[in-house]
Image 1 (tube, helix red, strand yellow):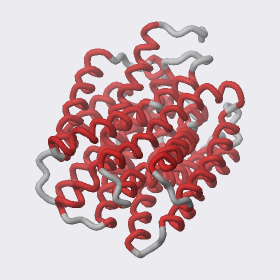
Image 2: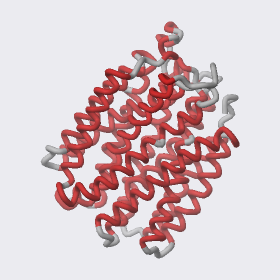
Image 3: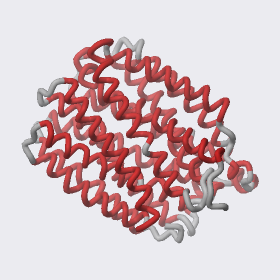
Image 4: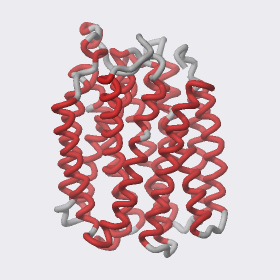
Length: 396
């Protein structure tokens, strides 16, 4: 493949970035509005953890049920179906009148996000040149924290002035706008159009366990499972912990924003480093520094500036390190089973994403200190790096 990107290729990668930006808004909005939801519905930390987990449960189902169909019906159709589900779920939160409805709406939103996320990495990979592929797949993941940054700043104004429900209404309208944009702008992936149709028709999740891919698949699943435990626990709880310490809403929201600003910066730097030192080394360096910062965060008494700096560093290294797994996963599998491979890996990881925030809430309600909780949840991402480094795919 030629080394230079055409304007069409650049446009598609940019659209994938915007779609991931939208997903960042839709997933992390609950982190910035969680304290207000707890107050209105009279929820405990554990019940709020279940709200996080309902969305993540939907994402898990989307990764398993929707994402693999990208190999069969096309990436574009999965984008449209997923965005329809996301829009419906976000808009419905505005009208939710009880805790059960809120859980259902978050699960519906998660289902759509789980369908689209693995296919974003696939489409970005398939529209890229060999020279730009890893960087493009990595930078698309930067849309997520950038969306979360906007969500943090917007929530700091919208929630006190207009209420938490209006934030979900605005996010739902934006998701529907992205649906319209994909319908009129996004072409189908050339790798999908040129695929071996007979091979795709016969392919299934079992193809991930043929001798060529078996070991890589197992280690990738373990890596995403443990990586998601740390990532989603941190993303879900850090802004809420800041508010629970008595910090004013605006300042606590900026703490969450610092983490996502760090994540965006970390993902961008990750994309640059992969081409120079390789994916495995990038993940190892990022994860070891994430481990150190997570333990500092849990064990130091912090004023606002120190908390802001540590949170920025946690976002940089936790999310930057984890997002390196996306370009890694697209390298492992051929185009005929790429959406299936990436989707099921991310689906397995979502079990960790469900488990992590819920366990963190349970530990809080049982009286575990912040120090103990951060020690416990700094360990899984280290295991993730170990498993990624054990993958022996010739493409890594």
